[in-house]
Length: 304
Ligand code: FAD
Ligand code: MG
Image (cartoon, rainbow, N blue to C red; front, side, top):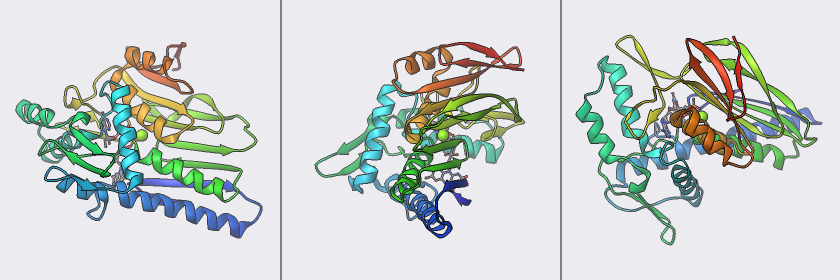
């Protein structure tokens, strides 16, 4: 297990030789560490940190890996009508500051930052492989895609080393590798009582991402607010959703989906999932104080 991207990454892998297993686990942890060094907006030596400081002044040249990652995020913003939006950073910072100061943000602060954000305000130039921001206070936050991307890359390292069965658990994001394609069952936590497993979902060589407000949130004036911000309002999401679990082939796509569905809510979220091939969602919704489970438009399960 290693502490990376502000959370713990645990990897279990089956391999015929203990030393070989140790080596390829280390290589997978190194790959996640490398990616954190590129994507973290908390580290002054990362490309994202450099972009957030300078991409409003002039176009910045970035690695091809980061270019395509950002292109994918912008594509996904279009697909979700802006519910997923990596330019949310100024608003996440505003609510994190509100938590520190213990007072809610003013309406005009939120409105001003809303005028600064939006994935449409990012200019990606494929020929020059540069990126620039149209607005002075635009900043990027990959909190809803970076862990998923890192998990996909770690799984690729394990497969490259001949690992046929592995389990990767990265705080709210789990990936399974199983070349024999057997079905595993992953327990789904009750968002109202996270120590309880409320139901389980079949998973086969896929990744599951959970977005919810029971582990990460902002606390201001004795009230908790989701860490997931609605880019349309600039405020923490406040709908009937308690958590969303998304199963898909790619950890990055599941990561982005779970955040987007949390913002979209049950009806719009179910419609998006029904149009999305190879992705399943399970919503836990608050109804008269209980956590009911609704599969993405498939069935309602009251589980407590
Ligand atoms: P998700 O639902 O997957 O994502 C929620 C996160 O995405 C929010 O925390 C916010 O960052 C962002 N977000 C909010 N609303 C939206 C939206 N509408 N659209 C798109 N994104 C949104 N945490 C630390 O405490 N310390 C660290 O040093 C640290 N380093 C990190 C480095 C990297 C590269 C990454 C990817 C994350 C890091 N984190 C760190 C964690 C990060 O701050 C988020 O809290 C975490 O990624 C939340 O993941 P989640 O799966 O729980 O929630
Ligand atoms: Mg996530």
